[in-house]
Amino acid sequence: MPSPLGFEHGESTIALAVWLDRYSEQTPGVQALDNATMILDWRNEPQLDLVLRVLPECSGRTRNEGLYVAGAPELIVEVSRSTRFVDLGSKRDENERAGVQEYVVRSVDPDEILWFALEGGRYITLSPGQDGYYHARVFPGLWLDPVALLSGDRAAIRSALDFGVQTPEHATFVAKLAGSRETPIQ
Image (tube, rainbow, N blue to C red; front, side):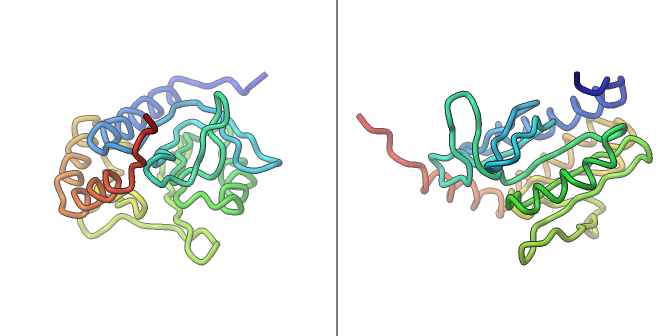
């Protein structure tokens, strides 16, 4: 039986799911997943809160295996309260070992965002940029306003993302994904 989840978890997950979904809508070749089981490796099949991945046909790191996604996705997001010890302990270590490039934990108690990026095979902690936003390394234009997320200001979350997807880096990334898309077999 999974741990019971409170309204804080549900509300935070919705805000983050909308953020990732909005990004995937504006970034063809990218897919947002909610509450999906991932086959990270031979010993880890976690059910994750949220995932953002480059599709396999666009040179993504994951592959489809039946009804599941296998391999290390580019980005995992977890909402954490009762699972904080696990999310920032063994789950973080498993994601690092599997090669998940970015891992975000939205902690509910205490209220904080922890953003990790894989560098040299180890996670480093990222901080917001000078503009106050987190900027994903793997997904150009995926910007997150941490103050807006922690205060529940969904309009400001969307606004930060809208700024990000209007950047030349995002346009270049979209073009790269389109250029790497495999031609479907007729």
